[in-house]
Length: 548
Image (cartoon, rainbow, N blue to C red; front, side, top):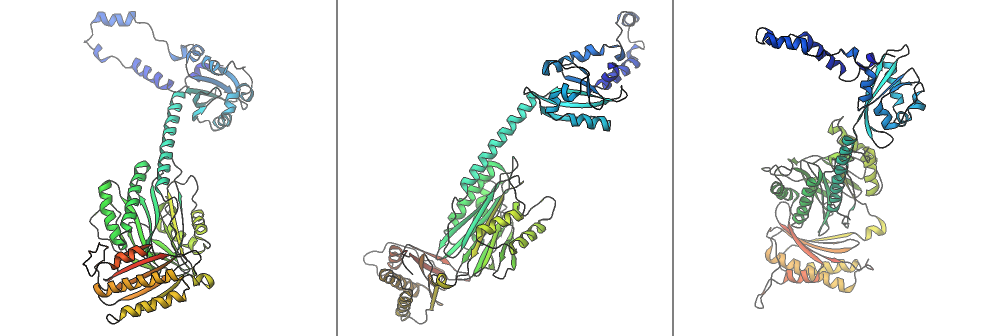
């Protein structure tokens, strides 16, 4: 066989031959009088003649090539030649035998189908970084040759073990960084969701499957007292440990601001300033909502986040897409609050963009698909959560983080409904409103069959809260008593927005003891401003397990 013709097909051979030919054909421009005749004669007479490529001993050249070279021919790829480097790597190989038996190392790494493809298509093919028996990694280039009637393939393998090991070390480092980010992310998320009295909640977090996909998605459920619940979901733009760390700071800040019991848009306003201080280059989206069972609505504000979806008791899905402000960290924007109905039997979903955003479709299409999935998803919040994730096609190798928070306001009937009761009284008139309030509270607590000690504490707290409102507040005034399966809540509202505070009363003071008494006898108390002006002051008592 003519190895000279085949050697001309080795990578780079044609370029080197062309370069030498051009160099030989091009005269030296300096020879036109600039080089002495003696020097020119010496170059012409004494310089050795460079042999042409066709005159080189090709077998000797191939045997000295450090890369692995093998030549096979025919449809069963019979071995025609292997060089010394190939023999040193895999041992001697019999000439004339089919590659399946004579070159088992190629069969083990799956190269034989590639030889068939090269022979049929007459086009070269390359596979990168395949690990061969013995642990070394090679990049194989298979080139068709036509020196024989049935054709052949020249296999040229370059040892890339060092590169492969470096790439594997890099991948291992990236995996460790991702595992660190996932661990940090999960540790910063709530390990157990708080369980509000009036809502049933469930959440899930699915980290992205790619090496750098762990981001800053988070969610939280915060019981505010007085039967109210705050629900939060957010997404820090970015990836890795830094995004998770920023997320943790924002989540902690949200919990602190939530304790102030501010309207949702004011909470986002505070978060916006904090996000800028944490990292001016990081922005985050966030939706903050508050549920009040007495109102039957979800009041929310959004900082660039995706719209909350609500399915009512009839299965109709509502998209709460207004108002929406820019993401946190942009600054200079006044956020606003909106509301959406959330009555008994309703289900609301808060989610991050990983659930609905796809590279090959519009974002609105993803949200519309989620709406259809929510319309048909029934069951407990956890069941609904899992169904929404499955319907969106989220798998372990998903390319983005996914966080979903599902809340339900159950429609309670029968014995369960008896554990959730409301009673309210408009406080009309002057000082005579106080004894009417005490009598009303006593009658309601008696009808709810509370123990005598809890009955007396409830009447005392009602008396102090009403007296405080009559003295410091302005009409309209209202007393509301509410019981759940876990607690008794007493709330008084009036038209003055000055919030009371607990203080130490001096022995000679005639006032200042009412809130201190309430804080002492109740398991919790608080106050907040109400929309449109005014305030609400509340306290609550934990119910004994045998009550009701």
